[in-house]
Amino acid sequence: MKIEIGDKMKIPADGKFHPEHGHLGKVVWISEDGKTVAIQCEKTHRGKNTVFLVKNNSKK
Image (tube, rainbow, N blue to C red):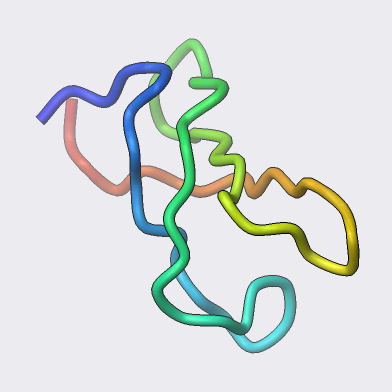
């Protein structure tokens, strides 16, 4: 599956930066090698729009 800018993705939850499960976001940036993507969360966090950098584990 190829990831493109504008795709909707589930944001992974962790205990520190994004503790809430089930949030969706839109891909707003992809690194040149395709190993990292930036996903803007559809919800605000502490009153701000947030973007999370996520490592893409798929093989190219």
